[in-house]
Length: 390
Ligand SMILES: C[S@@+](CC[C@H](N)C(=O)[O-])C[C@H]1O[C@@H](n2cnc3c(N)ncnc32)[C@H](O)[C@@H]1O
Image (cartoon, rainbow, N blue to C red):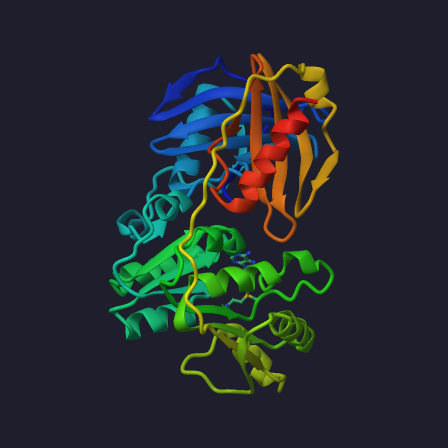
C-alpha cells in the first residue's frame, strides 16, 4: 500500500489542484480528530487520502475503502498533496518517477461500473472468484481464446501480478475486477455463464459470514449459469467441504458431482502445498439444469431532503440497525466544513457494501459513488432513508 511517513500533517485550502490532482474537501473523524480523509479527484478516479498519527508521527496513505483502480493515481495524489502542503517526508514507498509500463498498457482491469453499465454479452463468460496467483485463470484464458474470462480478486498484489501476465501473454479474453465477488454476482445477467470457479476459498472457520459459498451465492450462480453450466468449488478444508455440501444439498432441486483428490490440468500454489502435505482435496461441482428469469432490478438511490440535524446523524455512530435480510452499521462519523459524513456497511449479511454517506444542507449523497445496483442494496437504501429521517 503506497504511503508517506511525514513529520506532521498539514492542511491546505480546499479545493486546490496540482499536477492533474484536485483535493476537494477534508473530513475529520469525530472520535479521533487526528484522523482525516481528504477527497481526491484524478482523471476518472475519486477517492480519499487518509492521514492519521502513528507512533508520534503522521502517515498519509490511500483510504482502503475508496482506493481507486489505478495505483498510479494514488502515487500521484500523495506526491501532489506533499507538494501543496509542503510536507516534510520522513520515509516513503512512492516512486518519484513512475508508471508501471505493463499496467499502463493494460486495459484488462475494469471497474465495477463497466460491468454494471454494459455487461459484455457477445460470447460465453467464465468467472473465477479469488484467483490468487492466477495460474488457473491464465491457463484457462490461454487455452480457450473464444471464451471471455472474468477474474475477481480483492488482493491487490495478486491483481497486479495477473495484469502483468495478461500484458506479457497478450491475452485479450481476460478481464480483471478488484471487487467482492459476492456482490458482483448480483449484477451478472442471467443464463450467460459457462463456469464459475471457486478454487481454495478462504475457509473463514471463525467468521463464516465472510465465506464465498453461501445460500445466496449458490442462488446467484444458478441464475447466471447457462443450462449445463457449472459452479466448481475446490477445497482442501474438510470443514469447508462439509459446510458447502450441506449448503448445496439444501436446495430443493440440485445436481452435484463430488470428487476426492481429482487431478486438474493446472495446479495452484495452494494446491501444490496441500499435495506436499498429503492433504485431501475435495471438488463439489453443481450443474445448472434450469433456465432462469431475466435479471430485473428496479429502483433508485435517491434521497429526500432530511429534517434531522447533524447531532442526530452523529449519534448514529457505532450503532447497527437491522431489517429483515440485512443491516446498516454506522462505523465511523466525520465532520465536514458544512455537514457530516458517515462510514457505513450496509446490505445483506453475507455480502455487505462499504461506503460513505455525506449529508450537507440536509441533502444526503453517497461518496465516492452510489452503491452497486443490486436488490439487497436497494432494500438497504430504503431502510437507510427511514433511519436518517428519525
Ligand atoms: C486461499 S486463496 C486461493 C487463491 C487461488 N484460487 C488458488 O487456488 O491459489 C483465496 C483468494 O480468494 C480471495 N478472496 C477472498 N474473498 C473474496 C471475495 N469475496 N471476492 C473476491 N476474492 C476473494 C483472496 O484475496 C485470496 O486471494
